[in-house]
Image (tube, rainbow, N blue to C red; front, side, top):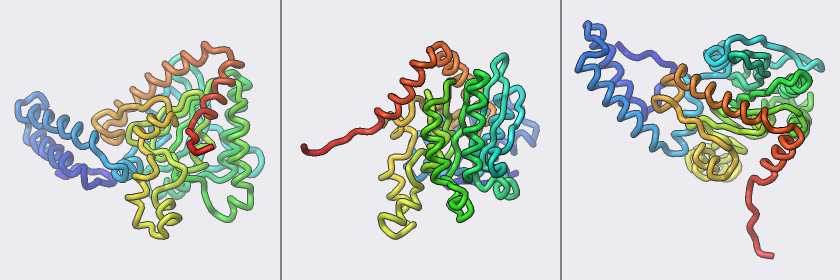
Length: 320
């Protein structure tokens, strides 16, 4: 029996082969505790570690875009006890590419905003593959200001190839909407934690990526431009995307080294799509820890540190 998944990457093929063998044994009546299945599970865990610890930048890009990778709505359902979605920017309309609302996690209530890509073809079309229009960015800012008003911490999930580049979005003020988020979020007087769960592409990601703590899933990516876009500009050839992925330094390891993110979240069983429940538990634990710490800091100091954090990213080298 083949393991059913939306997409299988070439380097994952050995894992799927072992999983199929385990499934066949279970269908034949072997128990999970049997010697045969235990040995296969040991091989599987060892192979997961070897495969996912030695990926090239381009393979990391493929994994960040994996069609089975958990989306925002999946994480909301797995991490939080309840969720009330809020709609609209109060200026033009509602953008399904950005989802937001009030959620509870135990006794803690918080505001969630984030990109939603969708799980199947119909969903992806409805959510525009997570590519937000101006109303999506304006909605996210509106919800953050509501969070500020009611003293709710903000949790932002980033997962987008970039802002929607369509004519309509440009006509409705796409650059201005992104710029407004970048300006205003630095002044939102409530703790903000950002989690990059898949793709973090260009200004569309950064508009939801300002916070006091920025965390990044191990196999997510974060970059000023997609590898394909970079290749098209620098080499006039999208086929150079593999080289561009290396040059952009977009992996979680690179981003941590460059102080673009604060924390890299390990992915259970090698990759998020292989254990969504386990990864959700890890995210819940980390965001709880971060909010507990951030909420102990006076707001005036928190805002100063937020500005300082982003102002200190990057180095300038050159002869005087």
